[in-house]
Image: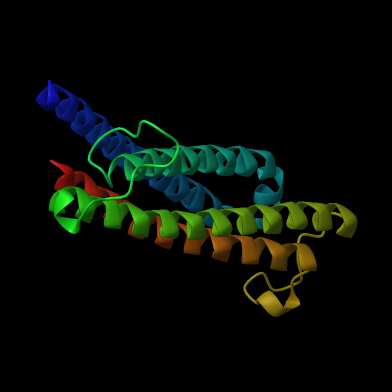
Amino acid sequence: MEMEGELTWKALFQRRVVMADAHCHNLLGILRGLLDVLDGQAWPEMVAGAEETRRKLEAASTELGLAIANMGAARHLAPRGEAPRAWAPAPLDSVDDIDPRVWLVHIRLQDAAEIARRVHDRMETTRVHMDAAELLAVLEGDSGGGDDDNAPWVHDLSTSEQINGFMELAEALNLAVDLVDQTATARDEVF
């Protein structure tokens, strides 16, 4: 009977780790696609595509939220090697009670959760900059920038906000690459 419960726990734990990794890969794909689309657009196209940018950021936030939820579920299963029966799991009797592979995956997921928090912060900052750029573009009229589109110091405020949002999105993408690396490693180590 004990063996059956352990297999059930292990399967749940492995499933949560695999699902977290899958959501992180989806997140990375969405951010890459968004960055590629924005990178190839001129300023007026970026303003016109603001709603689509918001939808893609929302999709990325959803994937990130699902990844964090799965990481959290796996981390709550990990300390005792069994599904918790109460809100607070019982304390461990000793360090020897922990399966080393499970503990290693737990630590990787803990690191991944911290990276995920940073990705979330960057994505929210991106959203703020993009929204500010859209609002400023309306207030400025449809000038869309200064005379020299290659010199950021001559652009209107809306263009500066768009550039800041673009830079934050690039940083979110870099962090998402690190996040995928952590979750993929955890996924490989869980089996």
